[in-house]
Length: 425
Length: 137
Ligand SMILES: Cc1ncc(COP(=O)(O)O)c(C=O)c1O
Image 1 (cartoon, rainbow over the protein chains, first blue to last red):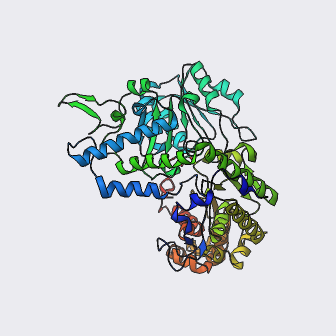
Image 2 (image 1 turned 135 degrees about the horizontal axis):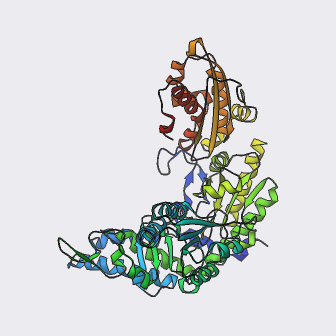
């Protein structure tokens, strides 16, 4: 019978871990939080922007503040030791989760954006110059696109873009041309947050390494939704954000190959990252602390580890299966409406998101109307303005799925899209 | 149901589908183009003045955008004809939402006021009161 029978885990049991999914919406958004004016069940399909937080992760944050809140690496007292142990172990949890050698290869950052900037500044400013080039793709998120573009301007390095084909995949012949002997860095998004394309990172890594270039994978949409192993992908850097995978905001991680991180100068200076300081000179802490200046996001780092444990319990293969199930179902049902244009590869070859436009309805109007039905989607350029320009559109609507979404929620989306079309027809 | 359904009342949809004063002027006293970067909405306004430049004679607008920004520009264009420049500058956000006759959700207010903003900026640039390179989005 239904697609529901193919769920890789008990979705209702997962939903029970996320109390926010039970809230009503539809009322006055200037009165923050649910109140009497809210009357419509929430259908949350904006997971590529940020995911919700399950109880064990909320508990991890509360337990830290209630039980052992303290600064890390500084105190000899017990609370500081407990906080330090938990915060440091969180790095091990991340390392294990993505197949890194150990905590020395995992730098906690604020988010993916900060991780990209860290490498662009600490590595890029030192290593790049006129005659060099950095190869991106046309589907980069602004986090990578703007960062390398600006580092290119500062250093004189050329910034190039691998073309996106009609079907929303990377033109690998173009990649083979653009990645050349002057390439120092290839920085490509793993799963596109707009097209849903899953890019061949391993193949790009091989191409980069053949030319003695490094590769950075923007894994903001991939680490949360599928098994990712830095060794299998053979990447030099990789970054993701906690808030897109059941973790809190304010925490993300940069993976870097130990030898490369070791050779890099710090990005931020200050406390926690130094070993010896005189009025004239300073020396740096060991990895990864050399890159974590100042008091870090301690509770958030610990909660990121809790989020990873939560995802690991579900199993990343099953998470990927669930994402693909909903993406394909949404792709097919939206396509059947006949009035919808979807961007990117076919339903069975994409990550768990669908960006689209409805004939005659501007994406902002569409998302306002969907909001009326309690359906939360993103409308806009999804931080890929140049890609939207290439697609010939100013904006699109995007539905993105996570572990707690259901087939019925996709049906609610499709019904609302159909009504919006009728309203404007 | 939330604010959205109310936002798309008949009048708004009518102005969106059949915009009034849509187009460009042959010989405008000023023309200005502005955009709302969060949506990618773009509006161009052409204005012909009268009365020694003190009164708005004719308005044409064109552009591309959501129903709220386009309907608002269309309705505003009808209001502007005969208005003095002083009255134009006195138009506030509340005047626009009142004109639209529907409640505009907070995230959409920028769409609703785009037409007004473009016209006001254009008038100020025309009078040398605003440096076109220094317009805040
Ligand atoms: C592909 C991609 N890269 C980078 C980012 C930036 O993530 P953050 O805003 O957490 O830094 C996002 C999400 O916003 C994304 O989808």
